[in-house]
Length: 632
Image (cartoon, rainbow, N blue to C red; front, side, top):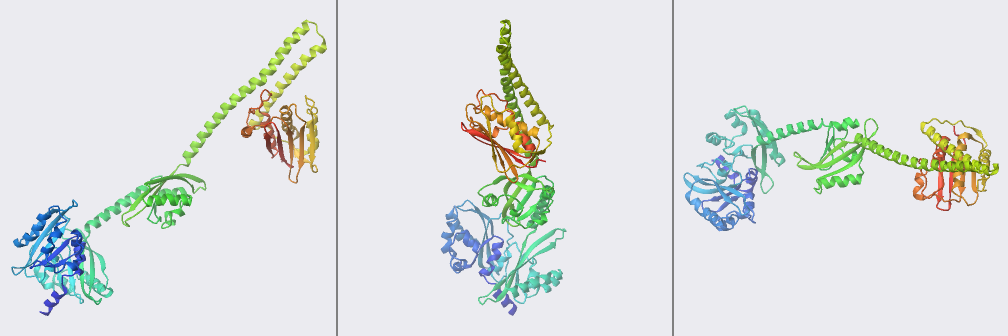
């Protein structure tokens, strides 16, 4: 009798059992024979949008609340009527479908509670699941809550603080005789009686005692092999029930069949392994991060490109791997994580294991980790180094072809102008000479035209020499042979041999700055470079003052500058000054080949020097050769 009293006192209709119904997603209401509410769980209150708590509903009459309960359903009148009429029939009702105003369909079950054929109460169960529950009225039970627990499809057991069985439902022990025998016994005693695994009983008892000692739930997975050799997985949890003083008064053990979830998890793991195995065989680099942008996966392509293993970066930030500008990467990454953008693209540079920089095109997308239930970022990187190189080479070829076409056009125009003019002069002079000779003119008169012919032939010869020089330069057949030279004497000789005086009577004035120093130069080659500058200076400054040549000596280098007050060079055309056959647009009818400066630049660079130009339209130009003292 004492044992029966203990069992009854520990199994009360209170909220300590509420979580059991929630885990199986059942909204439960239990009434006594007088239609007073003895128990309602939290899901029931949520379903009917009741603002009262389950505790506040207790002891109220169900018929007083029927009208407010019914308002959630489309056919509220019929639902309210069913609450009043169904209990009078005292019959189990299964799988009734009721449609909520939200459009969702709810399934309702009703079970009357009897004790020795006397009606003791009513159980109402509401669920979304279409799977039927196994309802069968159990007579001679001690409370309505026991009946409700018996109808659950999950194993439920309640133990006292001595780990003795207070209650087990049908799912835990299906046999009624064994279930009655088990009350008041320990798991070890029952498992021995039922010829079950003693080790399982010991392990479950340890977790019951652990829940009592720590006053918190203890969970574990348990594997059972069915008679058909099928694996059945259960998640078991022991929940300590505390009294008002904070002491454990009982322990509830509940099991949930997780076989389906385990199977899905296994399938997901296999699919994931297959997926990542596939990724390891693709050429593109694939990276996956968690929600904090820490690396969870990098495929084999990363190691193939960089020589670095994923293990070196696992758990580190993706910022430690990708050399994108940090602010740019922040913006793109968080745009993906926040859902602001579905994907982001860009280019980055990455050093390969060969030490060379690789160009990669990246794509960022959102990824989802099922196990962590969090979004991360999936980054795909494609090596486009070869593609970019091919594109660059193609552009270079196109550019080169364009330059060659322009060069060809310039060359044809230049040759046409530079040869046609001398030939015209020669032709006309020869005709005049012929007429003069027939007329018996004297030598002095004839010599004027013979000189014109000679001058034009010299121009053509000089032109052909320039073309031959450019050809040798491009073929790399010109070598310098420097020797110690007095720079001032060298420049003075160039000036005196052809530029003092010039055709129009002007001269080249030589200016020396600081003490002269002997330099190592190839006089023949540098003479050609300087002559081109002097010829241009006189030619493009006709009618202006004398051309000036300034030599300045410093500690490490010296400069030779040719200065004129001529027509100058347009600023927009300065960068083209040292390209073949180019002539400034303001040269007009002044003759020129457009190759003199090319020769000057090349010969100066052969001496390890450089050419600098300063010029203003109609104000003149300054061409400066900057040369080291030792050109070897």
